[in-house]
Every structure is written in C-alpha cells, then in structure tokens.
Picture (tube, helix red, strand yellow):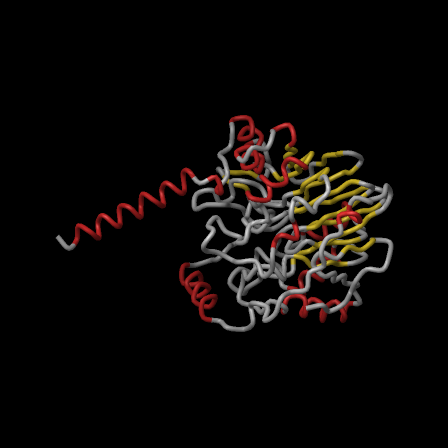
Length: 366
C-alpha cells in the first residue's frame, strides 16, 4: 500500500516529462522531408549527426560531468552582479536614422547585436525570455531586464542571423515577437525546422551550410565553421548545424563568431575572408570541464588575431551565469591579454551604439 502512492507519483512525473518533450513548442520542430534531404547532402553530416572539423569532446567521462555539476553548485565567486548593470536605453529616433554607407553597432546583451550596415538592420541571436532555458521557473536567469530588446524599440529587421539553436541564442519568445518586423532569417542548416514550427513563413528562411553565402539587400552573409554543438532537448543533439558568419556590405567586413571553442578554423577563415574591420567573439561560459566548445579569454584574443581583425568586441558575457567564473572575469582576462598583444578592444555598455568609423567605446563600465 505504501508503494502505490509512490508509483502513482512516479507515473505522473514520467507522463509530465514525456508530454513536455513531445508537446512543448520550446523544443522546436522536427525536420521536414525537404530539409532532411538537404541536411543529408552536407559533407559535415555523417551517421545522423553534424560533426565539427576537429574531434570535439563535450563533457567527457561521467565522473567529469558529476564534478562539473558539483563545482557549479558549490562555487561562490561573484558569478552575479552585486548591483544593477548599467544599461543605455535605445533611442528609437537614432535607430531609425541609419544611413546608407554607414555602419553602426549596438550591443543588446550576450550575443545579441543590432548592426546597422548600409541602411539595413541586422540582428543576431536575440533573446527576450527571462531565462536561457525551456522552463520559465528554472535555468540561467538574465542579470538585467530583457526589455532592452523590446519589439517596440527595435526598427524593422531586414536580416536576423541565428548562430545555433541553444536557448541563449535561439529564443522562441524573441522569434514570435519580432517575426512581424523581420524580413529574412539567415541560419545554419536545420534551424528552419524550429522557425517554421513557431510560425515563420518558409520563404523568409535562408539555411546555409558552412562556406555557403546568401546576398540580401546588398548585404552578403557567409556561414563559416565554428567548433560547438547543437540541441534543445535530450534527443536532438547535433541534429542542426552551428555556425559563425561573415557579414559584408558598404565596404565593411564583420565577423560574428556565435559560440566556438578555439581551433585552426579561425586562421582559415582569416585567410579566406579577412581582414575584418570588427570581430564579435564569445568571451564567457568557458570551463576546464568543457575546454573544446567555449574559448578561454586568451584564446578569444588569439582567434581575433587569426581572423586578422582590426578591433575586437567581446560578446557572450554579462547576461547569464553559464559557468563557474565570476561575471567580470572574462572581460578582465581578455583585456589583460589584449594589452600584452596590442589588440584594440571595444567595450560598449549594453544598449550603447557606436560608429565603426568613429570613436569606439573602451570604458570599463562594469
């Protein structure tokens, strides 16, 4: 008799988890036949999964995974800001005044950028949800109000670029809220399935394999390799591609790195597509437990040099607690290495805009 209530609770729990996994729109959609056919034709897709160019272990052995979980739970080292992060409110009048031939950058937090290039608005990896998680009650919580990326404040989006399908880069709330003002989506292979399942019209979606390009409104975007992985649930890891992007227009060349561990791919991209006027490279969420899928800050500086960049803007930090380092450690370590190597670093406040051909902000606002 004692086991019956336990059995009932266990069955209900299993049913709830199963229902969530099969019915939750957060997890995205499965591949349609035409998308699956294109995926299978990719040279980077073998035996049912996409592959990195170099062998890439994620978390390694089970003991290593358990140590990572324990370390994350027990380490206390200022992983959260002790006071509100300074945020500069977006000025809608300024945003609407984008000029042909110019390049203006706004950092909207984490990996979200508003790039106004040659009068066109390009947005990367927008996140509106309070947590980088499929759950509203659990998962990494934003350090500040995500209303900065409010659909009411953003102008018409000519191109939205998504680097991969992790929750801190591909957000269902942002896609649904911004879709009406978004003309085109440029994404790696397979992500179109998620977007379509959330109501995006298929004709707006441009899927790219590595080294494939698409030209939209005079802006050329080329998907380039990154060293990472994908997946939104327990059964879809490596089912969609991840990528970095070269963005070209008005005589400017930018590099948006998405997420990536360090490898020789940056040097190859630099040789093929560089030099770059500005590189946006991840700086944060690294750990000794997963050294292959996120760069150390010193490696971020090296990647920038490999890319032949003129200036480096660190992204992917100051919004979510995704590892065991303190929240300011990534940028502090990066600046120390950049100072040694004489690398120019751009550090705008969240929401702050700057012109690529003008004075680029470098204050230590944190």
